[in-house]
Structure formats: structure tokens, C-alpha cells
Image (tube, rainbow, N blue to C red; front, side, top):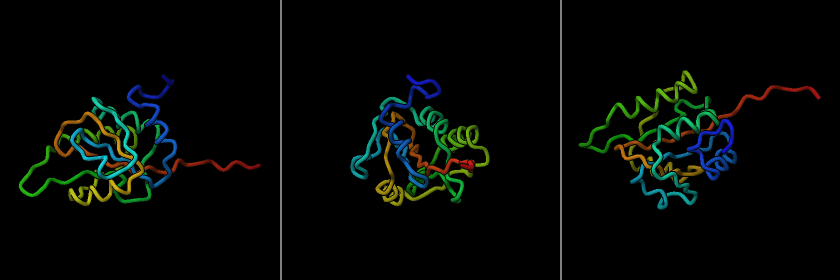
Length: 148
């Protein structure tokens, strides 16, 4: 255990967060997501819900402020419906850590899969809510100029 690092953040996830650069994306995938079919860097977080991971992750990284949508979620397939409470709970957590962040962009299922292929990593969670997958785009931490 490390002081200040949420216990839901495994050593493997901590390493990935450290190695990600600004603009890299991390997919928080539900328990049914076909992660291994789309990305070679898959981290297991079985039994852990996305909201708990989101809180722990956003205490360690910031979101990209140079893009219109630093987060994305899958839109419902035709004839299906979304639970608006899921997005609202994610957005509330994001706002708690990074106020002023826009609501997630909604993208079509197969476009979400294509984006997952390009993501830095996928975290397989224990999330069981329908359309609970979330993409985070890592931002740049402001650095103060220090004269030598």
C-alpha cells in the first residue's frame, strides 16, 4: 500500500498510469467487454466497479484539457436504451476531481471498439451496468518554469 494511492489501484495499473503520455487513452471496460480482442495491454480489476476506479485514477492523473471531450462512452445500439444515472454518476465523480470537464462524448459501439484498439490500455473491471464503459484521455500536468 502507498499513502495517497487508492487501494483499488493495482501496481500494474499504477505503472500504466505512470507510463501513459498526454493524449493517451485508458479504457475502463465493463465485465462483458471483449478487451483482449481489441488491445494487447489488458489489466484485470475483477470485482472493482468503474466508479471506484475512476475516483482512484483521477486522484493520480488529470484529463486532457486541449480536446473538446476528454472522456467518451458508448452510445446505445439501435432499439436499446441507456441508464442516464450511469453517466451522471461518472460525471459527478469527474467533476469532483476535475471541475468544468465536459460530459462524455457518446460514440457508436463499433467506433468505440476501434478507439479501444488505439488506446494505451484497457482495464477490465467488475462493472455489470449496461453501457458502462468509459474512455479517459490523459492530460498534461502543468509544470512551473524553474530558472537554473
